[in-house]
Image (cartoon, rainbow, N blue to C red; front, top):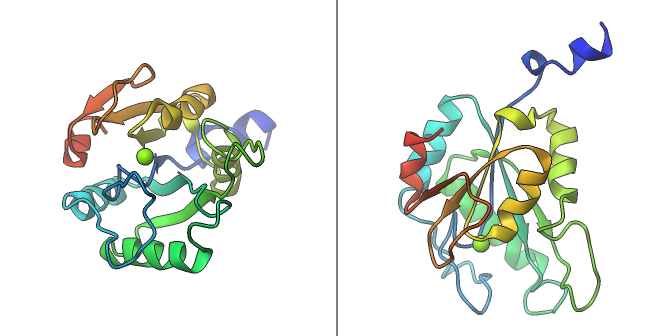
Amino acid sequence: MSTLQFKSSRFMNKAVFFDRDGVLNYDSPNYVYDVESYEIYPDLPETVAYLKKKNYLLIVITNQAGLSRGIYNRDQMNACHKKLQESCENAFSKIYYSPYHPDQSKSLSRKPGTLLFEKAIAKFNIDVTSSWMIGDRDRDLIPAKKLGMKTVGVKRHNDFEFADFQINSLHELKQII
Ligand SMILES: [Mg+2]
């Protein structure tokens, strides 16, 4: 098999990437880490079921600088991720997080860095041209644009410069993807 054939999208997976806070679950200005108050948006389970049915891999890429700031620990974060997965029938193939705070250490893993996207693309053999990123800030969408994906901005609070599409609520993804 030639390199060209190997890279053909016929042998690759398509994916929908998601930011976490403000996209999958309600956000808070003081970080989201208490599993008791961790609450997903009501239209999430139905939306992810729809995307799974269309054979998309679902992957989360989230900045969690509260970890390196010592505001919460990985056990607390993992408890939230368990709750997220359980409410969506374990729909997410992987949840990537960047623990770094820019004041403490610069990391390409922190969005708008592309590193976690690149890891996912390599691990899951993802065709970027048939993949999407859903975020509530331009910071989420910039790395996806750089890598050649299509982008959707969820209008929670921000205007977007880098969104190909904008939606008010997750269930509207069905009209786009
Ligand atoms: Mg967010």
